[in-house]
Length: 73
Image 1 (cartoon, rainbow, N blue to C red):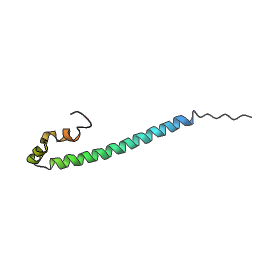
Image 2: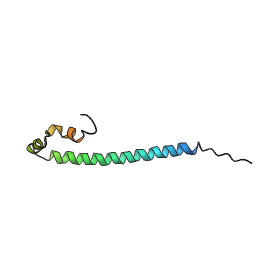
Image 3: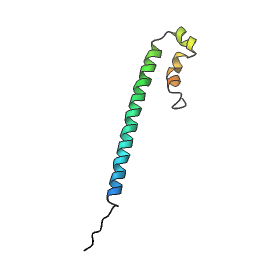
Image 4: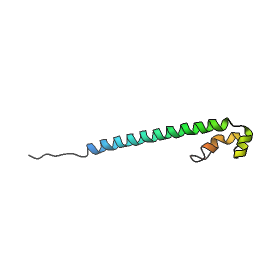
């Protein structure tokens, strides 16, 4: 009597779990970065216009400045 194993059933399942784990990890990283950026925006908003000018940032450009590495705004 011969036993046949089908590894094709296991591989897709493992692939799905790997994709879910990767997406969950990316989500956690994105949330941490968003929280950090929100804090940076709040800190910059609390500065005076003069302090922002000394930093080379206009008040209307705070969000653009904080997200400059992620997207072109």
